[in-house]
Image 1 (cartoon, helix red, strand yellow):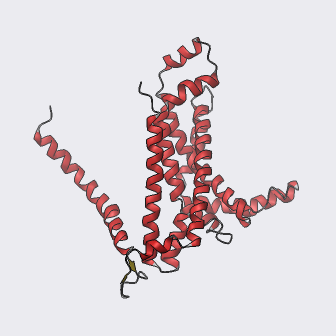
Image 2 (cartoon, helix red, strand yellow):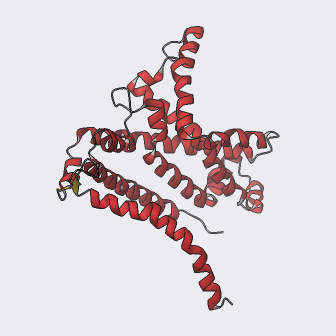
Image 3 (tube, helix red, strand yellow):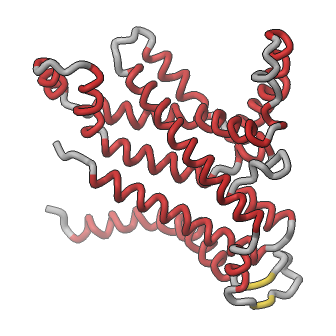
Length: 291
């Protein structure tokens, strides 16, 4: 039984982490809410004009922000699907009897260790120069060309790069879920005559729902918040066709110097991400099976 001294020691060790979280997350977040009610260019020497909810009202009249919202939803839907499908396929592959499964696991996890900015610049070279060379050599210039110059293909390029980066991390989550499935349940299904396809859908997927909940949460939130790959790969171009939520807010604050208005966008952005992730978690947790 724990005594009171243990409780105080536990609280003492939690103090540094709590302080760091408060200083790095909570305090800036509260300041952001405060600034959202002012018209300000972000320069301390210049005055701040209180405008109330005008900044929030103007967001819904901002056609570029609304366009960024639609593009972000499209990117998020595509990214969540592709990342989780590839993550699941790789997880099933490396948990099979494949001899090179350790090598495959390492190979697919490595892209996640590379920073998003660096990753974007690497793939920018591949899409701009590499694809053009392949198109000239093969003659398939309608497929192999600089995707970053096409508004539609630039978005596809972003999905490809982000999937390549995140699939390895999601693979680790799914591997944990697969390894947690009792082998006797798989064997019982095999004895009953179930094939691999039915075992996957009727046994593995229901028992993996806790891992699926986490994986969907991670991919959904990260797709909404993507910025580094967006900045280095496309820069929001061509013609702002790939300017997503985070980049639109960044441009508003740091390029247009509309600090208060940009903070209003950021608050609404936070609410959108929170609503979508909470809905996703509530839906998937209802499908979790207790063993």
